[in-house]
Image (cartoon, rainbow, N blue to C red; front, side, top):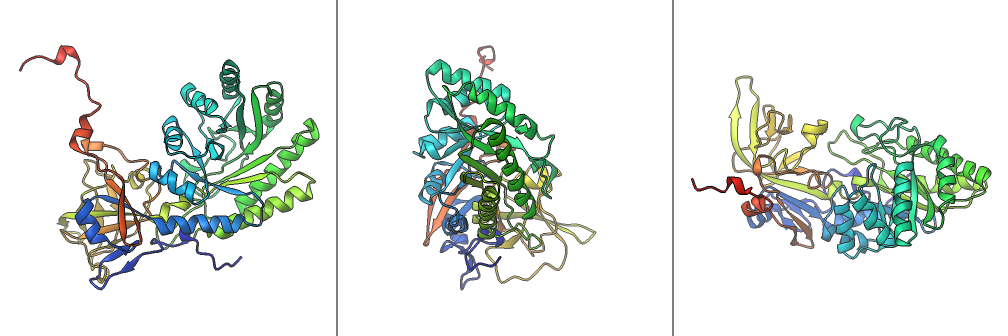
Length: 448
């Protein structure tokens, strides 16, 4: 499939990336050197135009399917500003915790476009979803279904739900981010769908059953598993119709589409992926004589992943007898735990010297935290020196959301860049922020 629609998930750099006459990396019309001077480092930079282009590619791909909608994955990167931006771009939102749901509601995101996920939702999360009419709960099992019924019944409300199934489809991705296999901790088996729907029917006074959800994993690079998923879910929907005489209104195919982290990555373009999914649903559901459901997809990190760049300042440099060099940055596993967690790979440049060629000797970019595994990029291939501004690409997803205060360090700031302007969307944590939640018990309040 070919298209002229821009799909940013296939690009290593944000769509606005360019080089200034001073050989500085530019993002969103902003000089990264000046961004670092103004906002400090480490600094997360998000490019508005890249996020917008991702949303436009998805909507263009889904255009063949009336009413189809892409949902933004809040877990990838979420704050009030991102919720506002996602809503502006016409995407829905999936959330996985009380905090994410609260953030979405606080931002004014429409309840009808919010979907609550999770394999072990707390009572507080379920109550918040039920009491905010219109939020759809992706129910993960029979025990959770009973809890939803109990909560809705006690309040005289009707909860909007879908059911998550495990289709047995496994994409080629990291073991920790597969979710569609039969022994996944998420969802119910296909064999349990009929009993589940029967249980729902008995409690329809308190439940609005919308349909089926499935998600096979993250950072997937192949189309075939997604098409196989459509076929399996269509057969499941047909079985519900044949055995229970009911049709579903919504079909959520999940997503988890991959992005480029290194030049070796070759993900499916956003447009191609969404178009293929839409066309497959249209074809299979028509062939089986099924009502065309409202189609939802969850492209995951691919909306914001390549929109994000992290800026670091290079510190100490160590030269080893082996010829290898280690360049320490002022961030690391606290602002990006993915290399230490998944052995994730990234690509970097010297943002303050974009005219530099590759390094003459092996270079590792290491973090500043007290772990030997705190290595941001092994074999970075750039001749970094003390004082250089280093840019690491494709950090828009799962960097801020997985960050920590390890070694009692504050989380970095995040700015959104657009048309030559940078706006703060997350403030840098201060030293006072680090002790704000601390409490000293009375028996330790003694005079030294």
